[in-house]
Length: 407
Image (cartoon, rainbow, N blue to C red; front, top):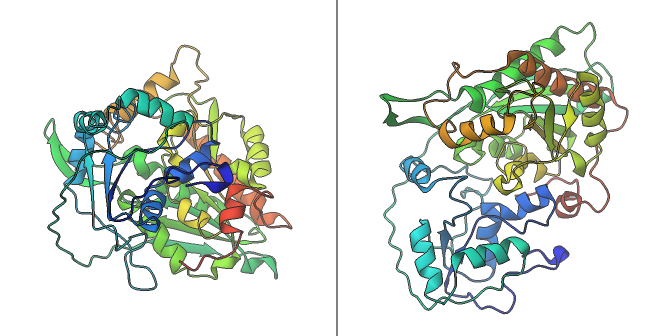
C-alpha cells in the first residue's frame, strides 16, 4: 500500500476477518531501495493488520524459489524464531490481530491460484509490473499453531572513539556489522557448523580493522565514532534494532550509519554497489571515496533480493539516520574471471551452509580496498562541518523525516 506511488493492492478488496495471501517483492519499476522497503515483511504484515486481516499465507513463486529455495527455507525453519522486545514490552513489528502466518511451496501456490482460474506465472508477471489486481480465492484455510516461548539474550559488542572537536565530538558516525551466523544445522557432507566466513566474519573483521586504523591516527576525527558489532542479524536484525531502541548515546546525535555485511570479494573486484547512498548526501562521500580507492559504482544487480532492508542499516534508517550499505559488485578486473557466475554459485550453493568457510577463494587485495573505502567514507563524514542529510522529498525523508522514531 504505497499511496505516494499510486499503488494499493488493498484497493477495492475487503480482507477484514480473512487470511491474505502475499508474494515476495514489489513492482520492478520502483527504485531499488524503495522496492526493498515495500518488500519488507514487517510492512506487509502491518498493511494486512491495518486492513483487518487475521492471517497470512506467503506464496512461494517460481521466480522467488531460485533466490531462496524452498529446501533452504525448510532447513532454516527448524531453528527457533526470535524477536526483540520493544520499549512497550511487546515483540517488535508483531501484530496481535494476525493470529497465524504460514508459507507454502510453489506447487501449493499454483494450486491455490488455479482455484480462482489464475496462472501463477501470469500473476507474477503482472505483479512485478504493478498491473495485478487483488482477487479473492474460493478457498478456506485452517491454521493451527503450537508455540513455546522462552527468554534469551545475546550481546552486542560496542566501542567508541571520542572525537577531537569540542562541539562535534557529541555527534557520532556509526559503523555496524553483524557477528552472528546461523549456528548448527543439518549435516552437509558431514559438516554441521555454519562458520559464516563471508557472511559475516568478513564485515566483523573489517569493522575491527577500521577501528584500529582510526585509533592509530595522529589526531582523532572531529566527530566521535561508534564501532558496533551486533548480534541476531540472521534472526531479523535483532541486535541492530535493540541498539536503535536502546542506544548508548542520544539517537539524534548519530549522524550516519555505515554498515558492513559480506564485505569481501571472491574475485579481483572492479566495482561496488552502494545501497542507500543515493538517498542522502552520503552519496558524495561514497563517490569521492570510490574514486580515491579505484572502484566503479554499479547499480544493484539483484533488486529482487531487497538487500537494503535485510541488513543492519535498516533499523537505523527507520530512526531517520542516513545510511549506506556497500557490497562488492559483479565486475571482475580480470577479464578472464566471470564475477557474476562466481557470486551466483556462492548464493545458490554456499550461502547459509557449512561451506561458507575461510577456505573460500577470497581476493584479499580487493578486501583490503573495500575496508579502505568504508574507512574513507566514515572519515569524510566524521570531519565534515555539516552532518549528512536525506535528500529533499526522498522516500526515507518522507517516511522517517530525519527525526527519531518512537517505535
